[in-house]
Length: 505
Ligand code: 0RQ
Image 1 (cartoon, protein in one colour):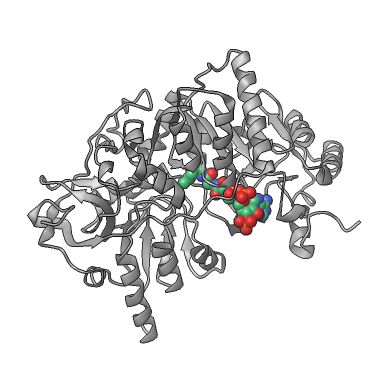
Image 2 (cartoon, rainbow, N blue to C red):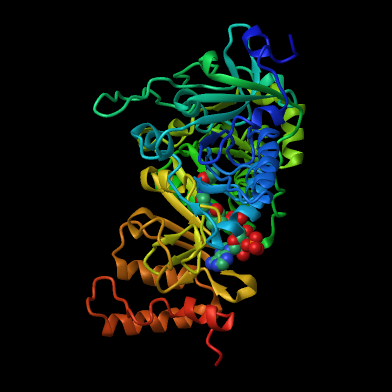
């Protein structure tokens, strides 16, 4: 038996990544593991990319549809994008080569709420899933799968796919065993039952993933780390954003709306969200919980110093240093972290019940609070909506954060009209930039606009926004959400034409 494979039926199927990749045929829909750079297959996609490139060199056509949990890494999205091997990719992604292909119009990309993916697959919206390629940390003597550093949609992929390729990665810590909670109680409407999870700590499922061994066509052993990009160092801008958030939370506690334990935190991906988590350590909180998608470096720090007592997620998203820290002190983290399928970590029913505090980054917001999380200048996708919509719509509080400007001040993060809307004004309660915080709760559109302009806009753009808003208030067709339609997107147009949202004068 191999070190991590303790069941004969699986060792019998051991083969090289090249042999396993040969099971993938053009036109297939292939579902892969992987969520924010963790737990993705490390070897088969690379071998597949070589097969694809060879086929293209020979004048043939070889493209597949790729479904994942969320973003993966260069060894999956990067190699397949460079080989021009994907017709369609869903959902969230962050690989630069993949992003380029999508934005060049060479392939299709579907950006979907992360909680929707598994159920849409079950509803049949994505057609048949031919093959699943899933990384696991080991296979037990009973033939069950020990999940890796992310769970994502793996349960669904293993159940739905006609055939399965397993990558068993011995570099993933053996101590991951027991850190997962796999819920098998989901059903299709109208047969759904309540999901009985009432605190982030609750275990409602099993430790291992089930697998029908008859579907397993290949098992590949790997020994490679998750590869994650480092976060930008915490700078003054993100520290100021964190400070505004902390003052706001203190205010909520003083008002009696939140207790000192707050409510379960959700924190998005990206530099700002990570820096804000680091800032929470300064807040002096103890014994908080998180019900979120990803455990990033900032959250690991909070668990380490006792700020967070328990975190439920679907994946890790750690830098190399974060992975080292986790592996070195895994005993400290083992009883404080549970990884669940993303349909549970992001489930609207649970998020609403727990009352999560949703903290997410954004690209831009407009004066009324519509938030663009995904498309620069309304057309160029950055990463995708991820789970931000699952949490913003259903959380107790929805907070969106961003520096007030981007690209050296040439772009304003607060605009007259968002060039793409992921979260409507109805889903946005709090907007924060380094300039300040706008608490939009209980305010009408015009009141919200004034708060956003006063509190969040950068000084280079404040007067311009005020001028737009004032003229809209007097000239708009309707006076409920005043807009000048011919001008509403003119800032984005100006940037396209001149490289700066500010007028030349
Ligand atoms: O670009 O890297 O080329 O410099 O966007 O911006 O300010 O470093 O912020 O890393 O926190 O990311 C919305 C992308 C913010 C992220 C987004 C450019 C900026 C920079 C990154 P460069 P920052 P962050 C749960 C939650 C959606 C998914 C989500 C995100 C780069 O938060 O992907 O929330 N959110 N999931 O220059 C042009 C603007 C810009 C802009 C920023 N207005 N115009 N470029 N940038 N604002 C987790 C999961 O779902 C898995």
